[in-house]
Length: 148
Image (cartoon, rainbow, N blue to C red; front, side, top):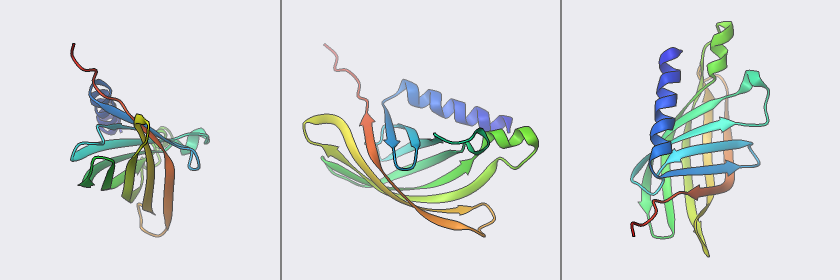
């Protein structure tokens, strides 16, 4: 568990110091922090909100932009869902796996704002249970300030 938590913290620190993106999916109560989603490959970390502490899940998703256009990006990725609080009472930290197929489109007149939609099949780690999740929300892409 220590290694997984360390990897999570390092990935979040790397994201915080580079060009980052944050997104909120209100219907799913999910907040995400990701590296620059306009690059070919990027990392997304998803956090559950509005939930009991025993179900605070984090999903780490490396993503690949399949199609990149000026106004829209289509991407896909794999996710590993974990709950680091499970280690407190000796339960398995790993909860399941997911696939992600999504699109982020620029919102007119607000350059860094994106509308985000995603389809994401999810399965428990034992593959005995699965659901099709959908995400709809807004993402904000931070950008470096131009040098003067």
